[in-house]
Length: 308
Ligand SMILES: Nc1ncnc2c1ncn2[C@@H]1O[C@H](COP(=O)(O)OP(=O)(O)O)[C@@H](O)[C@H]1O
Ligand SMILES: [Mg+2]
Image (tube, rainbow, N blue to C red; front, side, top):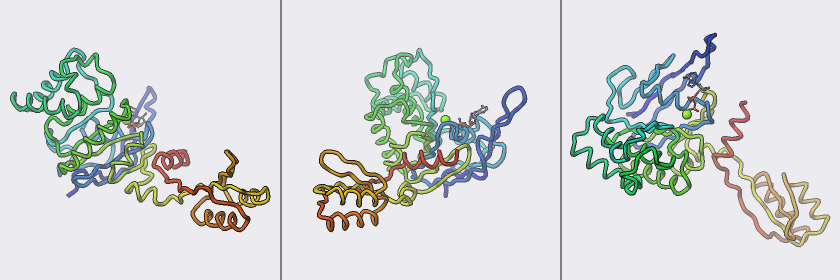
């Protein structure tokens, strides 16, 4: 059974005096299975937060519906089973991290002892033990992110919805959040997270969906999406004559000289083979050869800019 199922979801916002409408989400369909880490990706304005808000019943869809843990929008929500980490959490400035978690634990219906115990466990889990008694108003962006994650995990939810969980974190912080997310997956929990930062997504997501201006561009595993890319190959050549250089340059998509070497970029493996053969036949030597692995960031930039 899908933990999260979105069917034909659309959202139009009416804004301004003239009631100008913005199509923020256009017929979105997706299914997330239990234990999956699903990356919901797209640039700013793609419709990611709108989707999460609809799932949380903060706003209504214009069309379509969704099922979370088998319950349709409109049916009673299973609060404790769904954790939400907002993008820009507004937290109570004058509460300490610990008090804040107790307060949310209370709102979530945890009993006194349970919420105290859970708050302490989570402070350790998100690396915030040292800031337990510091007021939220004095937290850095990274600390706010961590305490926001702790809050989302208070009830041990089956499904965690995260809106840009890595933003505002340094590389170490991002790695820690990644580790927590992977650990949650090992407990067979389901994670749906939105991001416009892709570097982290590639490492942990089982599947991703790329969204732009409310429309789905692609869905698949990171491997599937990048697998379609032909991988360029870099070839560096030494001991070349001017004639050989001209010949090789003509075979490459890009060429430059530096450090006594000729650096060539072949468009794919086959083109690289031709370069190697020509190089050896022309008396040159292959100094180095490396495949350029595609990454999601490049893919994303290209795909998104091509539809604009
Ligand atoms: N409350 C709102 N009123 C009008 N337009 C909105 C509102 N919220 C979002 N939008 C518009 O909907 C689109 C999608 O926004 P959003 O879901 O926040 O994107 P993302 O989270 O992917 O950056 C954007 O064009 C945004 O300007
Ligand atoms: Mg957003």
